[in-house]
Image 1 (tube, rainbow, N blue to C red):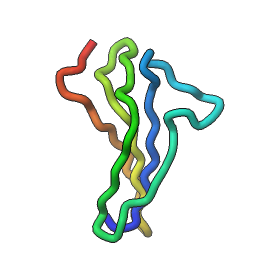
Image 2 (spheres, helix red, strand yellow):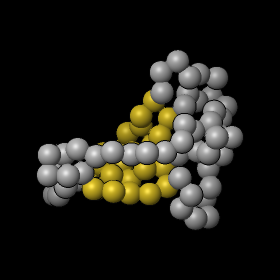
Image 3 (tube, helix red, strand yellow):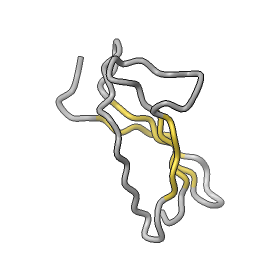
Length: 76
């Protein structure tokens, strides 16, 4: 989706979320072709979950999609 707003949130390497600021939490827009590039760390595990990054996608005049990117072969 061109020019969609992407909002990313993830745990640190110890599997903890920082809830008072914007460490490992940010946003960017896709380009005119719907492409984007994110450079970050691999998040740490926390109980009951595989490694993942939360993503919210908001395109113009569309509902917000909340999804996750999982890392294969990285389970607790």
